[in-house]
Length: 304
Image (tube, rainbow, N blue to C red):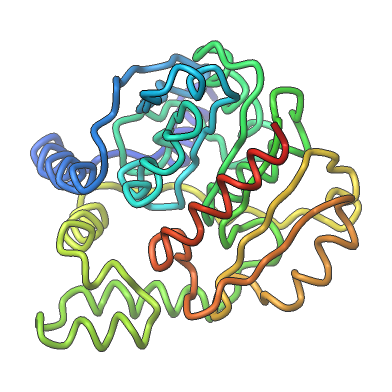
């Protein structure tokens, strides 16, 4: 029985294929990080689910350093490097911490599954505790949006607010989204001259940022994700959320139906704000970084 349990656990835990391709992937991640500001520091936080790697961005302004920090949660199959268009604007206003989620390709080490809602909330609470953070503005993109929404439901005690960028957790992930992911990955192999047109057609900025493209391509080869798509929160669960909530959706999102959620979320979550970003799909914080950064900064400032 113990051997069977260990085998089942290992099947649910993400891992790198080998050290050589992992190191190549880390180099690609470093190239994406270099597109944005350098972190003030990095650390590893131990939780019962694994070691969480964290990037810290400290504000230069002492007044901003005293404000409630922002904690960033990236999407599935990614890591903290993907926040390069956003960290400068956010850290100008407050400290920023970007977490590599265990179970995704990054510098965290995954030991126990966290895709179950209660486990995911426990992992994040333990990570925040390990960082000494008692109150944070949580920002989540895609799967990180599900993590943030899930935290607001199960362990909201440390949350000043939650910002969701085209998040999971609101609808069941449909076939159209998986088709988009597959076609986008296939398009990374397209000739360089075709990539701008494909990027516009697919709403996929990865195709026109060489460093992002290289990181994504290597990540697929280097890491084996072992995680089912999380189930969306029920209407009863959404009604139970009391944390200030800000939802930014891409107008052409294939993960959610933006107009449906623009009506639905404020009806279920008291005080929730919802905005739709034009001319983008699933990556508004990359496609329209300046506008999205400004909206996130203003929302967090309004909360305190």
